[in-house]
Length: 159
Image (tube, rainbow, N blue to C red; front, side, top):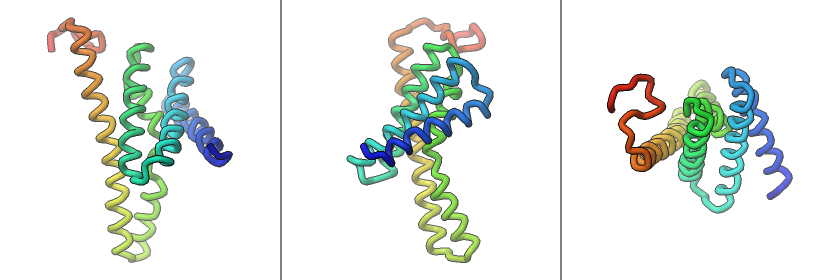
């Protein structure tokens, strides 16, 4: 791992702390949310050395970080979104979105469409990773906990 990659990973950690504070996350949840951001960028950098397709990389990292968020949410007994939203902050395709809009405003429609489609692919990979991991996690917890009254449910009605 290069010095630049280590700095990027630490920057992902710091950026995640900033957003976690902005989302009013405090205490132990703040540390675990920031750790999720560190994990997301670490996985992105490591997998980027093996996988050339960035969309697949985004999906795999999103999947892994979402599983981390699901586990932490159950351990800490807090909503999963506390960890997912902050941990995926480093992966937001901001640069790609910027270049999409820059091409749109400069009138370069061919580049606008290319960058726009690519940005949508990255965002879709993030969303799909979250959906797949959440679905798998829900199925897993239903299998190991056959109790019809799920502890995360606000009401005591059967599902």
